[in-house]
Length: 300
Image 1 (cartoon, rainbow, N blue to C red):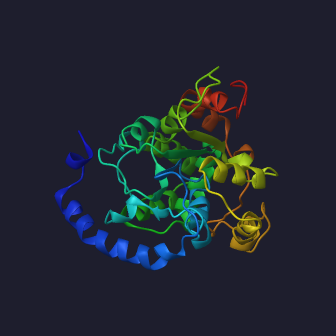
Image 2 (tube, rainbow, N blue to C red; image 1 turned 90 degrees about the horizontal axis):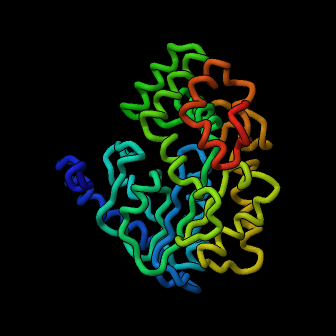
Image 3 (cartoon, rainbow, N blue to C red; image 1 turned 90 degrees about the vertical axis):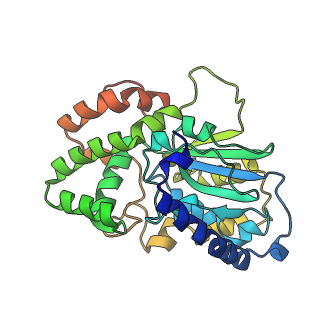
């Protein structure tokens, strides 16, 4: 079944009505005359998983100062859905038409097989950011219960979690993320074992590295990979303007469960998952953790 068949007819009509307004807003915010240099690529695909700094990177890619030095406008296809979200599982988000040229697709939540269905131009780059699925689980729980904007489905999830204990809420989250295809999607993007070649222009990064001491170097690597040349000083300005402390008003590690920027750390799962949670997770993500070098064995 292709995307055209999957999308209900009323949704497709709603999408058609929204697109002219979207492009009017885009041209107003990102006027062509502001571009100082053009990146030599047609599209940048920012592929990722939920709770892996996707909105942080989207904000950076959407910054008008970045646009001025690449000419690529941010494009989020989900905004054309009435709910603002793609309701399909991450393993079923196929695309059979190319995305608009001259855009950064940010973010794309999908598995590798779905990514392969996207018709791509000759010149493109792809970024994939992954996060430890155990931390995704914990972050998902707090987000759904406290900070995520509520729609019909998220409100139902919030009501469900509110009636569960913390431990049962995490158990519910495991099954929810499993059904959504989150764990399968993370596994599908793992680098092939022993493969030192990179036949596709894909840069794979881990969230834990992106928020660590290597952040400046890795953000520079993202722009280099994307063939976006920033002028001296702009990278430092972006790091300052989009720092955790500036966005949240707190230092990284200081928790506010009501905030989208709740804590901003890795390994938050260690004092939260019980033996029962781990026993359920190991068949689902045990090998995935090893592939992504989050673990070296199943002894965790």
